[in-house]
Image (cartoon, rainbow over all chains, first blue to last red; front, top):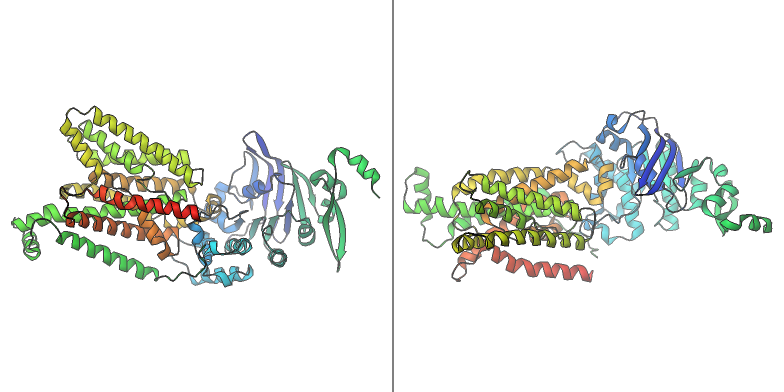
Length: 277
Length: 335
């Protein structure tokens, strides 16, 4: 597989009807880093992820995978280089939902398979590896709609891992999970980054974002408000402006994390700030 | 919710069993009929080219009927599975969603304007154009919505439109005999179809099958949604075109010879789904075999039932299929 050295986008714009979902966003994802994409609901996080995955083209702006446009790199090669995990399994219809977990995960091997060839030993090995990593191998023969929401997310994560792509874009992989599996998924994604994979993950949980990500990018109303180390992005003024909350900063065993503490009234920020401390 | 693991026959075995069963039913269909037939003598006669009575019955009546039944059933089954995969909706069926009705109207136009006699391919072409227009309309109207309701409503609208134009053609038909001919044809039947008609439609049906079966793997990726399929390198535009054209070819050419036979495309994939672990790609081939078997059984039943005049095949499948659709809808409401 030809290695691509980065996903680089500049000036991305995309409109949903009259609403601008993205309004001139620049973003670069490099191998070996795990980047958290944060922002309030409707900020354009999922839209940016879809564009970086090559699933939807932007209305304006440039995007290059290792210096190549979507047309130059080609569908199949792009699919091998970038794995994308969608936000929800809602898209599964009732009947497809009864597919076995291992058959769902096997779909991740599609970009590597030649026309009309069946799954190779290497494919089966990748499927098993992915299911082990996402801790869902025990469900392999169960139909997807017989699993709980969190179990289902792990199977779909395994599907994305089975692509074994150098870049992994995951949309809210932790949202439906219990604390144990939230930690497991974030550790797994960080381990993937340490092993050389470029990981971009959208998160609502700022505690997970601050603790596990090398870098955070903050989107608000389709614009990038901040991009940098978690400490810099989770600055009180920036967070108050983006989320209308105040954070509590803490540290445990040498790791820094934050947790949302109290709402900030956006129209009376001066008054509350005066009254604080 | 299904929680138990699903026991399944290995895929090659399943295909082999279904293939053998389909061939056996085709042979049974050849052996069953009104005229007494000495099969041995008929085959010997047909083989040596002698025009014995037995040989004529075999080659001119029995064989086209059985082969057409198998091919038409396969077309409906595989198209049903393909449309259900494309629209990601288990209620998609060429008849329910109006594709068969529109194909029938296309063929009626050919009858009505007298193209049928002008050139041999006119009838299948008319059927295919009807099916194609209906599938495209359907995709426009319901393609974006995931709800079964949206799809069924679009199907109702297309069926109504095709029905209205067909009624117009009947209304304006020059004489009652022509109208009666169209009505009987619309009910769908395998009786009195010639070998020439079969040979005309068969290659077109097979072309449609190839287009549909070749899409199996990409159709499977579609199970996770269009975006995920695109992220796996599937060319969605081409896949849609392939499925729409393939099912229009298969259903259009089948319906143009036999008339509209409903519900086969609904029932066949539904019966086969548990046997292939609900995989939309694998469902295609086995639904084709199931469709063929259903049509062959139904066609044998209309010949064996002591009802005069003979029930039309389309009437038979509707009588069985419509309650099946009702029970499916009930089941969905409960879940």
